[in-house]
Image (cartoon, rainbow, N blue to C red):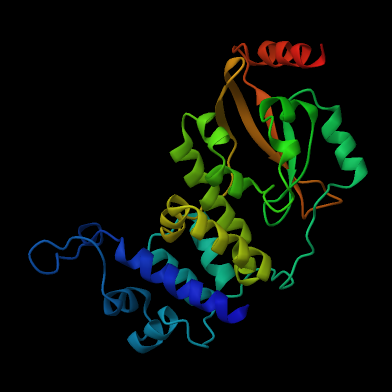
Length: 278
């Protein structure tokens, strides 16, 4: 797992270096038209480290990089806060979880009861983004959830492989990119674990779009945002998406879809519920 982290750190640095705009750093283009990307020598000079050491870092070699040096490299690469935290995690400056995380197929009963008490869609997500619980309102929104087998009941897997869910998301391209970047940021050091590596490999084989987005190595922290669904029975549903982490089960997080005020979403959900109970 440590070796996998080093490889990921090296590839992440190479990708971010290649995407830097030379003019923004006061550097001339290389050749006639190359305006993107810095040489390793240039990164090393800006970060005040040796070229050999920085080269080894990008190659994923077994070297010890101090937090201060990684933060200096992050500044040179102009990483976002989320990207810097990801870099530090890959460098070993974060709480390192155990290599293997026990699969969570069902939320604890008291947390499932909390989900059931909510009158808007909500579900629980495990560390590998498996869906470990949901409420009746979520089943109304996404009717397939109860019939999906445990192996496929994973948020990333469904986003990239379920045509029904894709049809419900008018902003699928944007949503899928957000999810992949958030998954990478959250998985962090666990990316080398069997569960996470297996999921990523399955998705890369099943979805060329996932493979392309994953290769971009985007990293984002979760942020509350508006979500729009096109439900086949009631039309447009607009929610504010939030996330909560139970203090007694921090390995899980709850995703909440709160109907956006000023939209008919709550009424449409209620109407859908009445239709289903007849």
